[in-house]
Structures are given as structure tokens and as C-alpha cells.
Image (cartoon, rainbow, N blue to C red; front, side, top):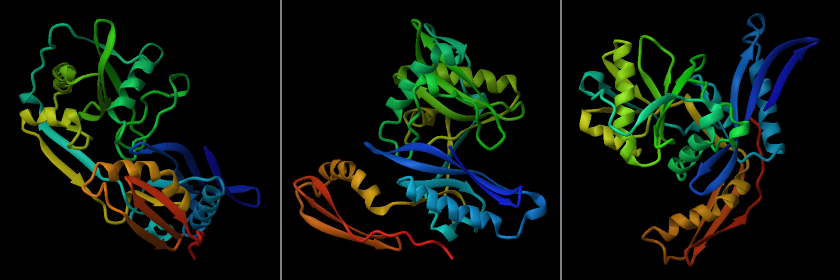
Length: 309
């Protein structure tokens, strides 16, 4: 993590945290600066201090070689630094009374224990999210904090694992909220564990006396497809100028390190045998992509970084 602080004399008046993340774009792995913890002391607000900190963050991320930067932001602020809507917010909602609460034979449920279960859970997560765009690459078990953040800032989470024959067959994570049932992640070894995960989530929802359950999950996830049998309402929010936003920091570096993934997608498309060139130009600079023989080659242009005024 990198911390950008702004001081007025000896007083810290504004600050931003840059979380060092690695995210997937298919098989590519990109360094992403996750902007968070943006704040200004109450008595120093509306003086442009957050703007100064953001300008410094952009310089730091360019110097440190980040491919991308992403954030969950307030409306009508971060577009000034080139951030655009990039992250959808999918939600699945269904009534808990329709869910079977009996645990299938051969499975048992245990509270997630980082020391005992982290390595297996991380393995399942990596396999499930292998090609999921912008999914975070989690660190090895010894460096991973475990499940702690819930569906929003200041919400905490709790997790359980479903065991079969002593191995973790699946897991789920939900908010620590006695008045709602919000699930933020589900992982699995194979779809056979889905009825057991449904049963445990249903038991927890009924113990809280909540009639609806919400799962933050893309509708093409295998577990989401399984849930269709229970009459699920699926909604995807795309925010115009706020919430999940991202931007490229280094144009040439990003496309160069994604060239292999672009080639993989090309080979699996109707244009696998085509030869063509594309030029991409914006305020960051220019790159040219040359495709042929199922491969993509990046020809760099004069990349530059233009600061917001």
C-alpha cells in the first residue's frame, strides 16, 4: 500500500491510499492501483486538497508502473482524472422460503478457519475466477487476510466452508448483518456442492427471520445459473459517473502485457485467420495492434501522460 498525504505546515489535512492489487484480464495479470480511503479533515474541505492528492496519486502510479487504476467513487468527481464506468454491480435476489434447508448427506458445514482452510479456499477461488475479468489475484495463504470486508465499507463479513471427506468442497461469505442476508462470494470444487451451500445459506437466512436473500454475483457464474430453479430476480447496475470506475495508467504497457490474452481471444473468434491492424489513440498516447496468424503484436506509439487541470 502507498499512502499519499497532504500537510499544511505540520498538520495532515488530506490523504489517499493506493492499494497494490493484481487483477486478471483473462490470462493476463495487471498491476492495479486501487484508490481508497480518500479523505479530508472536516475543517479543510472544499479547498481542493483531495484534487491535489489525486494528482499526486496519478504521478505515483505512473512512476511505479501500474497498468490500471480502479475505485468505487462518489458521483461526478473522478471523471476529472479519466476514470470511467467500468465495473458492473450484479445482484441476485430471491425469497428464502423457497429454498431447501436440509443439508444433503455426505456434507458438513464448518466455520471458516484461516489457518485450516485458507489454502484450499484460495485454490478454489483461483480456479473459479481463472478468466473472470478484473477479479483480484489473491496472495498466498500466509499473506492473505481472509474474509473481513463485507458488501460495503464498514461492513464486516463471515464465512463458512462445506466439507466432504475432510476436504473443502465449497464455501460462501455473507455480511454480519442480523437484519439482512447479503452474500458476497461463493466458491466450489464442483457443482455437486451447490445444494449444500443453498441449504446452509437458507438456514442462516431463516435464523435471521429475513424473507429475501441477495447475492452479489454475475449472472453467468455457475452458482447463479444453479439458482435459477428457485425463481431469481437478476439486476445489473451500471453507474453513469460513479461507483465502480477505472482507467488505464500506462497505455503501451497495458496493451503489451495483454497481447497474449488478446491473441487467445482472437484464436477463439471468427477472425482467427484474419490479418489486420488497429490504431488506438487517446490523451495518454497511441498504440498500434497488428494481428495475424492468431497472434496480436503491439507496436508502441509516443505514449504520454497528461495531467488534469
